Image (tube, rainbow, N blue to C red; front, top):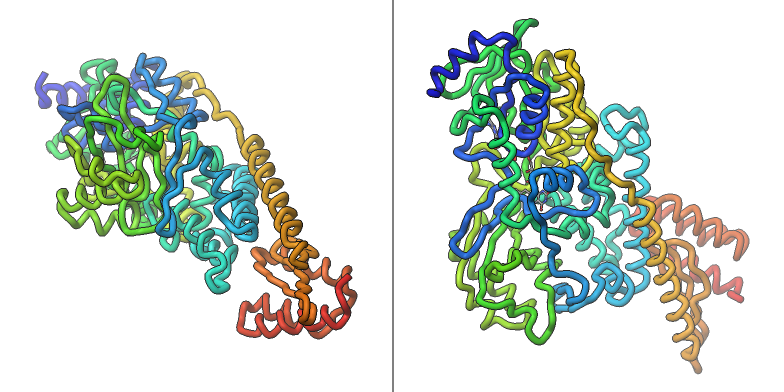
Length: 607
Ligand SMILES: Cc1cc2nc3c(=O)[nH]c(=O)nc-3n(C[C@H](O)[C@H](O)[C@H](O)COP(=O)(O)OP(=O)(O)OC[C@H]3O[C@@H](n4cnc5c(N)ncnc54)[C@H](O)[C@@H]3O)c2cc1C
């Protein structure tokens, strides 16, 4: 049927259809549930394909996922959809082989990256501070969850404060610049922000970061198991299969961006796509990333909260490239799994072996955040050359890394209707001031897209959940039964906290070990309260000295340390006060205060 005839049919159709804008996973999910409930649907897609940020190119060497590629263990909505559509997954090569970590000009091959990194590669003070900071993220995430999950509904003053900060502000407060003492920790947390969001720590709201990680089952799940499996044949087929299952007239009308929406009439909403034929609809679901809502002319203009939100939700930058090889050279000799994290440097920041069963060996690599923005301006040959140089270095085989038989890439920055990857982010002040416009319907307009999800925000799983939620809202309005709920996200926070706790204990063991080791040299760690270490050094032939090192992360650490010192040494009036007031101000008096405290303790004598 021609578009024109189809449209005439819709103009006269009663009941009026529901219009879904965007045929990514979220829009496809919404359209599926609506049509299953017998609601007529019209689905518009700006691109010449369905799938949005799931885009599988059928390269001659094998399918390549330029967008979403991985799923993880608590992503039960996407698991259920895969099963329903009979699509198989494949576990990425994992723990039986070694993981690669490149850091500070050195390359390490590890069995358990988190554990080995914290336990073996870092000084104990730094690893203690890092585990403490991870705990802080979990703790704050739980506060957000317990307050309805949507930070914009919260009156909790702490939550409001977190939205005034960038992630970098939090990093600075947790890991103050004391020489280069916490440089590694700072690098790690900047990386933790950059990798999943595609933006730098100084660009993003700390509240948004906490919300995102909590919605993704916590930091550990999001950084590790979320990349457990790939979808055999690529992720775009999910949308393609769902589209094929829709009644013919509800299937996505491609190459047809919606340009304007008239939400003036309380009995209908009028949608005008690029082909110029307006459609009267019962309701409309916008299933696109929030910043692209701004591409639509709303009449009348949406209220300020709604039209300002898109201006504050910039997309991240993630360039995903694929290199095909004749063999998995990273396996030979070193037995590497091909998965690498490159903490510093100006090049790719991660690699994965994304080879599907029976396919040509393929390594995937990512340019992210600031580096991604810069690399996006170079030509493909320069990116390929740069990535191969880094891969050769980290896997210890430049010659083999250079011998790729194919290369494929996609620059989401240049994509007119998406404009970046992997997700829309939030600048400070966005969630608390404009958050209500994320998913609350306005008039007859409803909102889907992964950015509006309450679980796995930013991921395919979140996109499906958001589509399901938006369809449920519309069905409720239409007086129709809502679809059955999606499988809930299992709560694994406690398991992860237990694992972290074990790591803290391992770190404490390490502290004890270091105390024991140094005892023979007459160096003794006398105390440890968070952020404070007192050591006595008795070198033969010289006066005994007391060394104090401090690295307070939170005001409560300082209070604890102050309490500890007062209990232990009584009232060290001069030193203690100077030390703590300087510490609170973080000014130059800190060193003077520290010296004074050291002197005072020495004067009293340390038993
Ligand atoms: C490089 C990259 C890597 C990723 N990795 C993963 C991963 O490993 N695992 C994971 O779970 N997720 C990953 N994601 C995220 C995942 O792809 C998204 O969360 C999900 O696909 C979003 O689906 P959506 O339907 O919400 O939005 P989209 O897929 O963006 O769909 C929105 C659609 O709306 C269309 N549109 C926009 N404006 C209009 C208009 N005016 N009229 C008509 N159509 C319009 C767009 O063209 C688009 O097709 C990744 C994303 C990228 C880009």
